[in-house]
Image (cartoon, rainbow, N blue to C red; front, side):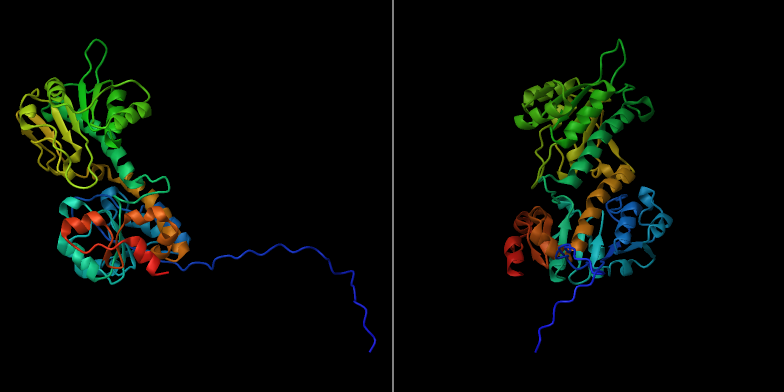
Length: 404
């Protein structure tokens, strides 16, 4: 049998082919539900129409309850144009596998929650109840909290944005209550040529304290900052870029400064329980009549002994002639800005989860996200919550490893 010669045609082109890479199969779209908030005077919404538009164009579906964005001035029309489905039945929205809320889960929501649902929302430790957690555990829910959501740099982007808003807003609010129209002292916050600047005391050198100090300095006020962490005081000075009057919290010195100030801001943080109460009733009673106290720490108990929670409708009360502003959730009063800030963090996170095939798979690769899960398929994975409510704690790392 004669061997055939290989046949070579001039029409062939012998070129090297590109190497084909292993490409992940295209992820299926997820369904996201956004209910209208009915508690906590919550005006924010967790996803803006722009964010919804990006999610929809990436193959996801978004269901939003009628008028859910009204309080932050995002209309149903904006959402439907972005590709969301407007739903009039609240229970229908809660059927979405991923639920995104800007207020914590409340008792009224519990019957509507689905088994194996993923919920992204704040926690609000001060109002959390054992029954709510237990009910969510029964329904094998996976829950992610705004407060503990961490990014690659190990900072908390939502908490940071809300703190920036609260810090900046607090000085605008103080300026408003110092004016004669609000029965304040009739003093311009800051000062003008020839008149001594108003004196602002800020207790706490975290992000709220830093942004409050920035705003007060920009208005021309004289600012004094107290904090027990010298490293935080240093960081605040470095970030603001100028020498400032700072001090550790020393009661006699603090009392002396409070006596002569026009504005006092409580901005101490606490990651676990109550914020330390550093200003006693006696210190407040010695303050000038007509001065303003703004206790930003009120949602964790407050750092002035005279503080009591107020609302956006009735934000102030008087005690010892001092105006007290103790509204928790200040960012909700600037709902549109706050909604955009939350949306900027959540939209990329949901996109990433969609590409990976769900939050359970995403958390395997992204170690920094593990901190934000307080429930995983019904298991309580937040040690502090398990201690506080006496519920069984399970280590999230072990849960994830056992599922591989």
